[in-house]
Length: 328
Image 1: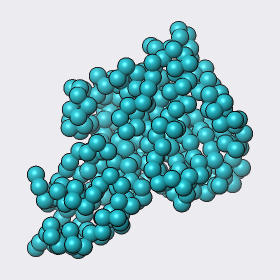
Image 2 (image 1 turned 180 degrees about the horizontal axis):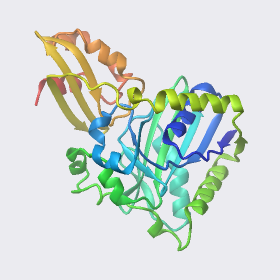
Image 3 (image 1 turned 90 degrees about the vertical axis):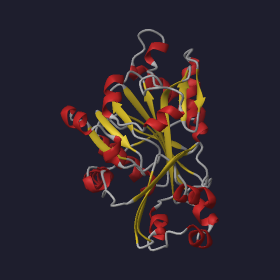
Image 4 (image 1 turned 180 degrees about the vertical axis):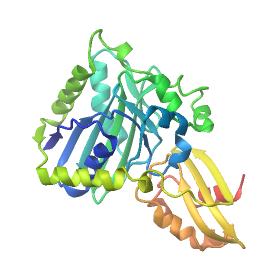
């Protein structure tokens, strides 16, 4: 049974806290539709300060938050609709196509030529209208995605600092040219609220019904506490900027890997891994493993177990990681 949680909140910190609470604190499977008033939501492994246009964010009062899932930073406003699936899953891989399917099918039923592209996008005629991300937690999977219904695209472009390499890898010369809203492709007069109800009905049809789940007051209080203490906390949102004297980056088909090391007397004193990749689990143990190791390729190659490495980043082999560290 899939449960639908009515969530009228427009606060990004609360909405992300609700996802975490349902993922980690409950056993049921859930579907949510929700909106943020105006926010930038950065990926779990990104350096927040480098993803946002701080001047624009401050001038416009844009909320900045960090989510549990990997991937890249996204902009939300009231022209954007978000969806979330939280299910029990023993699969190690992320099923982006599976959970984006209801959106694609619903759009196609409205005559919109939507389809899947890349690792985690839904597109219309080659332009992105939905980015998806996911994470695992103890046999459960959280998958969520954006739906650009009628987003202010100028604000989207101005609010984010986008890696030029990422844009060039898409074969276009600007963020604005690779994204679009779905509203121009929809039947005239269809509102976002009508679209929301139509998508909910599509999910209900695919999953054989949706049962309403109402949070109890004690659950509501727990979500609010998590939002206040974690998702609204600068420590979680921005983290600590690492001190480093070695930086190595490379873009793979599965995302960018940005390694920053503080190396002293041939020893790695501190290591941080940033990027828009999707990790199977928290990468902190991998960063901790690197700290204290000699900054020497043969030594790292001999010590690093590839099977263990792939428990964090399944597409990254030991040789590839070492190539990033010691070439270019």
